[in-house]
Length: 89
Image (cartoon, rainbow, N blue to C red; front, side):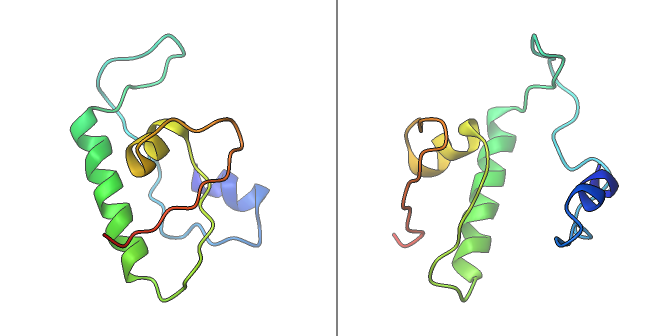
């Protein structure tokens, strides 16, 4: 929840997050987590690309998870690997 994140990371602003900002519903995996449908994940990747393209910064650090980054950069990354990605076509 955003309130827990705010407590753990008081210097960051989580006001833009709704109560549960992750995918809810759908089939549950072996870890008890709802599996996000591919079309939903690709929609998030597309929205992320548009958001990054709208930013004025020339360099932005992004931290996330493997399935999202696989769709963003086109390959699986190693744990804690750094990858340079450009939003320009």
